[in-house]
Image 1 (cartoon, helix red, strand yellow):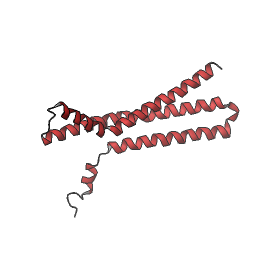
Image 2 (cartoon, rainbow, N blue to C red):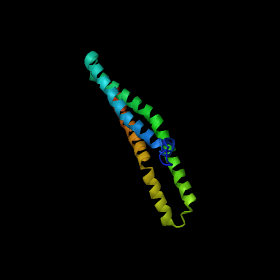
Image 3 (cartoon, helix red, strand yellow):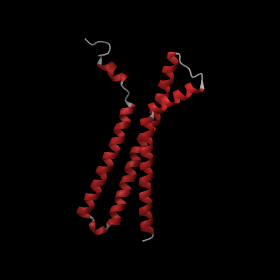
Image 4 (tube, rainbow, N blue to C red):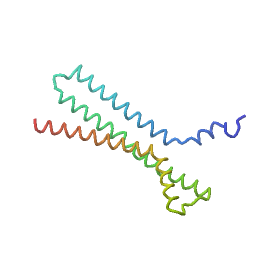
Length: 149
């Protein structure tokens, strides 16, 4: 019924899941954090305006930091696993094809190819770390506002 390329189970096994999972986690990280921040803002507007804007700032900082950190706990190990798996796959394919890095130029070419293969993972890690630093900075700003007020 199905040809060799048309078998649905073969198609599912040939398509890597880890890059798609990391991409989904990154998008969900942004969407969920924005949704949670909007909930904080609307709850403040409806029920807690008498507490002041410092309270809103605290809620935003806390929600953003802990939400981002929660996604980072899952995303960073998955990205590191993806980097390791793509490197292993790349070297296995090279060995299977009988290609070896004999010169410095060939080794540099292999490193460029690996960087290109893993560029999405490195981007996700950078975005996650920058987000953690951003939310930590905002939380520290809140801390200094409250301590010196």
